[in-house]
Length: 272
Image 1 (tube, one colour):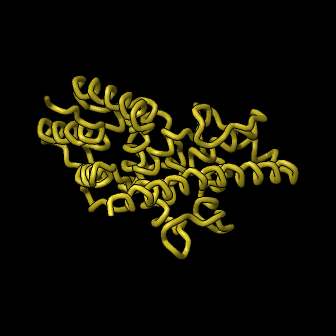
Image 2 (cartoon, rainbow, N blue to C red):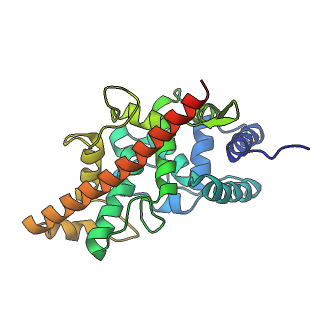
Image 3 (tube, helix red, strand yellow):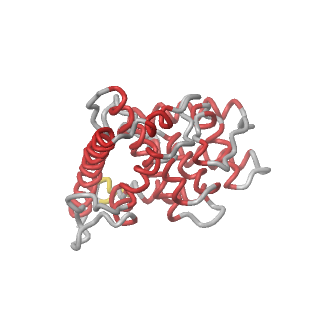
């Protein structure tokens, strides 16, 4: 009996199929076309991430339907939003590394903080109700990991290598490297190199880029700009509140990363 393909194997097969049947597109264009076929990742891109291609995608309908299926399966099985994966990679092809963080984890964490600020809510990072849900963050992390290590002009090759390399069955144990790669690239591991630091340092990019996103006056979110109003209201009391909410969000995000690093380490040890 033929075993069912994993979501990662299906994704790689999908990309191979698009490349073979759309030879007019280089790898970078394949990723851009896929990203632009998802309306929420074509229209709701902040001005802070320009220059960025928002034109309608030419991806054939049969691939759009297949992509919708893959997105649903990835969200259900892996808690992974593929839209965030492709957006993080496509952003990197268009803008610098700082601004790509704004349309990735920094943007999700920043909108989470501002949502808690404006709604007087205490939603937890990674929860389904958060604007930085676990599926969003998994997509952000995977996309950034791939973008950080992809050969120039070869994002499809990098996606295939990443997901095939992150799904290694060794002695029946699945070994993932998602969080370990992210933590290593952002210098979030302690001196042992096997676990995360206890706290996000004061001048760390996680804090700096998220704070910059929150304060940037040119962000356009859902056709309006609540951030300009917030910046006008940023008196001492509000600054303190935003700083507190940011500290809490970063602590919660770091806990997610630390837990992932620990689980990946334990899985690797089981294969020895």
